[in-house]
Amino acid sequence: MKKHVFLGLGLFGITALLAACGQQTKAATTQRTLNVAVSTEASSLDPAHAVDATSGGILEQIMTPLYDHDKDGKIIPAMATKVVKPTDGGKTYTLTLRKDVKWSDGTPVTAKDFVYSLKRIVDPKTKTEFAYQYDAIANYQDIVAGKKSPDTLGVSAPSKYVLKIQLSQPTPYFASQMTGYYPTNEAAVKRYGKQFGTSADKIVTNGAYKIKNFNTTSDSWDYVKDPEYFAKKAVKIAKVHVTVLKDSSTIDNLFATGKLDDAPLSGNLIQKEAKNPALTKTVAANMNYLQFNTKNPQLNNVNLRRAVSAALDRQAMTTKVLQDGSKPAKAFVPQGLATNPSTGKDFTADADTPLTYSPTKAKAYLKAALKELHTDSISFAIMTSDVDTDKQVGEYIQSQLTKVLPQLKVTVSSLPKMTRIQRSLDGKFDAVLMSWNSTIQDPSDYLNTATATNISNFSKFSDSQFTALMAKVNNTNGQSAKARYQEELAANARVIDVAGYIPVFQSANSRLINTKVGGLHYSMLQPAEYRHAYFK
Image 1: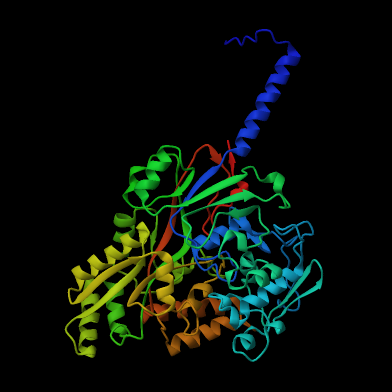
Image 2: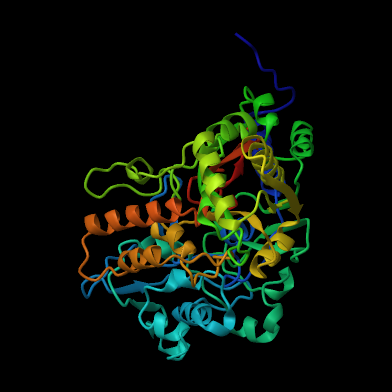
């Protein structure tokens, strides 16, 4: 038995010493900075334009939405005081909001801030990249068509802390949509105009952290604990420093030397760290896919796109190239997102889609395409972002197509993410490797991105049969869950059959997380929220 000797200290002295040590430890833990890495820059802090994963991750830290997800993916209240059941046959949501939430400038967050935010997002003048996610709200269609004013959107504030949302039809997944519904400070938008959300000093937030030292070209920024946050006592880490790091070797070295606490890892370094207890892998609701620019007559050929899809060995790519827990695409919907309402079977297991590797079929499709196009070869470039994973996938696709289909002359162009996004929006590409990540637990959120009028449909792909199927999917009036699910399966089968979009793989989130840090939970639907983190 070990003996502990306290020289010159009585009981009171011992107690005081222990208390002081405890206070010093607590203070050191609270004051210690959490150092985090992300793989890409952010495009915007504006909830109306935060279209990329990094921007969405920032909003998770600095904003409080109506609802949130817990670490198991269950929908829980956030700004709303509880998760409510709709009335009026599933068409009306009446939400009571917390009264203790303030903006970072000290003013209260009220129902009017949500009304303003939603109306601003659906206003065609705002040019929101994902406005269609609000299409269930009454009058949305007429507003985007220019037939009605945004003021007619079915949202209102009957009182200061009551928000009422009226839908045009029952929407079974609307609760999960509200996990991405953030308020917007109208005074700040008017003050900063087009610069709103472009930098840390041009945003007003209502989350656990305020953001500092940020603009849309930043390669680092900070989160600092917001003293106005309603649950500030539960926030254990006062400062988080974020750095954009695109090279996995750099990340691995910085983590090994204790300069990073939480960072993404990719490629063969995942195998190197396979036995490291700091390595975690979480499958994400992130579908990566190819879009071909249909304004180019050659790339608008269905058989060409089918040939490309059949030439991809998705299983080999995920297990031998990425090696990060990513899954080969089985549908245009991620595995684990949605299930059969009758059997509980996963959507991807029910989907009957031809995403298998078949060099024989690929060659036959290309032969037909070349005949239809009256040529003996086709050249195109694949545009990707310049992060390691995207570059690896682009290079793999290039090598695979060259091997299986030598008549294709394929190059790869890896660009900074913001450049890639802008060129996609401008239609200045041949083929682009895209990804879609969603917190909406319904296949339609992925399938709708391929509809002809969707702003994320950079390729301008259009197919009348797919359009008709999605019209049925999106009309939920009097529709059973079983019938709608079958229509989603049919729409998924159609977009893959004509290779309108070519699903490639479902991402995994492989990260190195300091084992002395607790509370960092990455789930399929959202990144970790640092307000839950603590140093052990």
